[in-house]
Amino acid sequence: MITWDQPGYVVAFTTRVGGVSDGIYESLNLTARTGDDAARVEENRRRVCAEVELAYERLSFNRQVHATTVNPAGARGEPGDGLWSDEPGQPMLAFAADCLPIAIARTDGERRLALVHAGWRGLRGGIVAAGVAVVGGETAAVVGPAIGPCCYEVGDEVSSQFDADLTVDGHLDLWSAAERALLQAGVASVERVDLCTCCNPDLFFSHRRSGRERGVQGMIGAVA
Image (tube, rainbow, N blue to C red):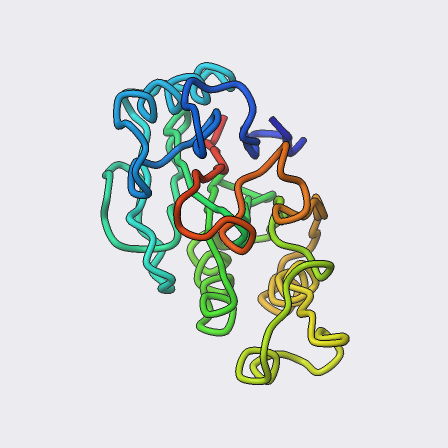
């Protein structure tokens, strides 16, 4: 796992290493929606929770739909692309296989955490601003592993949605787009992992590299 060192919070990004799934889902796949065995996915999620000492039985996650809805944690499978909580020990999980996993934490006053999943549609739609708004106060954020500008080739219909300098030779820089969106939404401090999911097949699943038949990694977080 790749952890974010933010006092008062538990946030970690998983890789594909350390699970029980096999074949194209090897090994720490966190979804059954692309064809993996549900029992193996459940065991993988249990392992992730155990690694960060959070209760699997309380794990909350969305049915991600590339929207801009940020749901309160506590349910499983509600449509949306963000979760937030101010309850200590309430684990939240977001899934990704090239899209951006982003954690936003309040750094003054009451602790509050939001996890959002953002592809280019979510970024343009305002999922980052929605996550920042629900957290409130002064905030810090981290952008986790996602497809990098090395691999994210897009057409004009996508690149035209973003500042012109974010696309070079037909490759869009989602990492910088996310950082820019966070800063524009008022986040005081932004960190980036800058690991490409597409060109690191030993570490990450990638939709761009493999298509729909593959697993997903995730971002797990909670207020400590």
